[in-house]
Image 1 (cartoon, rainbow, N blue to C red):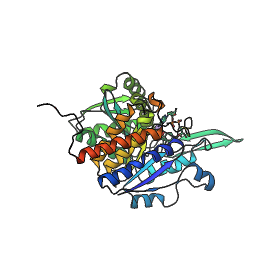
Image 2: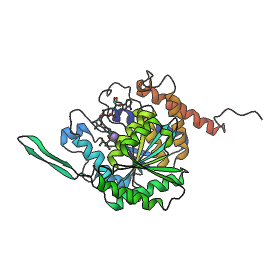
Image 3: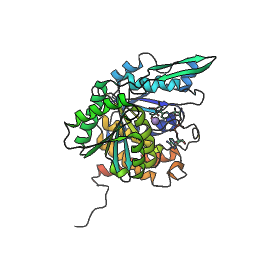
Image 4: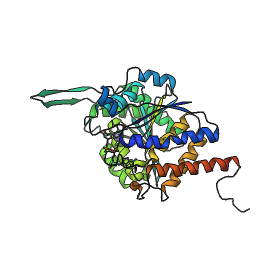
Length: 354
Ligand code: NAD
Ligand code: IPM
Ligand code: MN
């Protein structure tokens, strides 16, 4: 198995480099054979060479790697994020990763959020007219192609049904944005006919955000167009306990190409301090392990991360005073112990008296 690693900028780099030793442990302790290559694409390279995503990168990633792990992009020296759009949006579109799965692990239960990931307001259609050096007309078109919405909605519904979820909510804004709104509603209503086991709901995105914060327990599955899904995922992360905890998978179901990344950005406000929470990056690596067929290892990694988040090794965003390195060292310690327990046939749970 080959994993492509794009650490990126700021804390993206910090958290991804901190979780990589997990792979060494898994290769050594459980006989996994996951090789990784690191790609230095990001702000420094952009500023030095003007290149974001190099020519040929999309094809070569698709051909040679089973999964991609990305940190985050974003640098105050590039305020328009041109390099980030080239690399991140370039990969999402170039690899046709049209499903962005962003699970919200909440105390009230998990919400499976599916965000369309390549079109809508992110389609890259638009332009500006400048007058005397400033923008006088600005256009960003919201573009949706029916086939994309259909395959996205079908994938989300199938996944929800297959994982035993019982209800799904479509988020839209058809009262104000009627054209793409109606397309999404039509597709959702048509596709729902194939999923009688799911109860369907539809909500305007503003009201959905209100209800999500007030009572997250009323949702199980959510399907959202691109920009709405982006915003909902940060609200969801806040409900989870912070952006440092939220992981995501960008998927092309047809090709099996997949890119895993924390939901958070490069966090310039804490970059360089060594205190970024690596949980989201570790959980993203766990999703990559699942994708590569290492489900048991992924479960052990997730459990170890959750445990450490509740100890004195927790980082400041979780109310602790731990560091990125210290947190991951403790995760690796506990993960290693889980495999030793496995080998010794110990269940890891206290035995019940019988
Ligand atoms: P951000 O997600 O980087 O940070 C938002 C807040 O959350 C900050 O206060 C930050 O300190 C905190 N935070 C985020 N991740 C954390 C972690 N792991 N541990 C502890 N605290 C954490 O959002 P922003 O500040 O709006 O964006 C910064 C840059 O990142 C921008 O350039 C933006 O475009 C970019 N960005 C990139 C991605 C990506 O590459 N996937 C995602 C979001 C934002
Ligand atoms: C995310 C980010 C990106 C997005 C940005 C950095 C382009 O916010 O992955 O959530 O909007 O998709
Ligand atoms: Mn976002």
